[in-house]
Every structure is written in structure tokens, then in C-alpha cells.
Image 1 (spheres, rainbow, N blue to C red):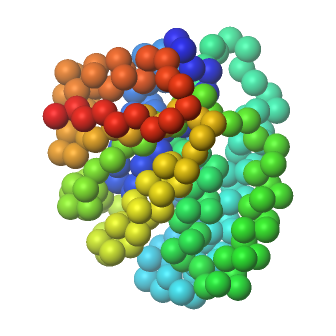
Image 2: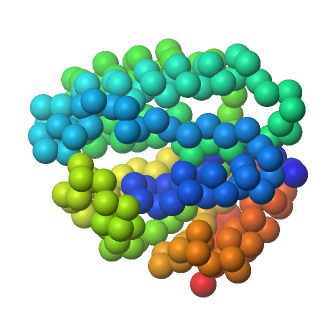
Length: 211
């Protein structure tokens, strides 16, 4: 295993948690899974994003911070790697599209303080899907509060991720194009993903098409 800490990222419905669970089972790694269902503001946010944007993002940020802080302060010495289904910076990327200007400036100041103490991943894996494919996955998993997410919102989130990942100069980024690929049902596709992630990479963006 060439990586000690891998962050699996992607848009809503990309398959981050599913891949994280599959990898940690295969490699016997420690895992960090985002506890998004515990956010009490999330159902209200999808109905009234302007009203509930700040509390939903603040809750996500503080919960992610607490989870990462607890995890890295008590490392599991019997695990040789860690796989997470999010990278802390997603807090800021999502907030860009949900907060008003003044709210975002305040939020960014809080984020910069909280982000200072975390280790950086050795590798970021971004699962790239088109908006129609994301919507199919969202509909399939059937979470009531996600059923009305707009295509425009998903497209903006995708653009924010890609712009951010292109700006990174110190972490390797593996951009996996998995549109239409249900790797949790397709063993060959999953093995290709594992092979890609297992390689060593220098810091830059790598584009991998699994078609």
C-alpha cells in the first residue's frame, strides 16, 4: 500500500461512501465516514437554502472538525492506512454556493482556524460523474430530503471541486471518470479502481477513464 491517508471525494451521489467501505474492507484500513444524516438542518436546507444555508454548513463544519480531531488524536496502531469519504475542504467548497457574501466571509475565517491542525491526505481520489448520472444515483438511494436537488446546484458543486483540485500543488489527485459505472456491482470496474489507487503518484492531477 503506497498511501497512508486517502480521501475519496466527489459530488452528491458519486459513490464516495460505498467506495470507502469497499476499500477499507479489502485493505483492513481505518475509515472515516461523514455523518451527514445527523445534521438536523439538512431537510430544511433543501427546501429553503437561503434561510438555512449558514446553520447547515456550520453544523457540517463543526461535526467534521470534531470527527477528524477525535480520529487523529487517537490513531489505530493496528491499521496501516486510513480511507475517508470526505476531505475537510469540502466544507468550504459547498459553503461557496449556499451562503451570502457576508456569511461566507465569516464562515471562511472560522474554517481557516479549524483547518490548521489536520494532516493532509497522501492521495485525493475524485469520483467524477455527469449530473444526470448523479441524479440517477440520488433517486436510486431514495433519501427523501435529496429528491429535489437541482441540476444547477450539482453542476456548481462539480465546478468548485474541479477548480480547487486543479489548484493543488502538494497532493496527488486521481480524477476517476466513472459515469454510468456501478462499481459496487461490477467487479471488473472495482478492480480497475483499486489498481489505480494502489499506484504511487507525484503531486498533480491524473485523469483516469474507466470506460
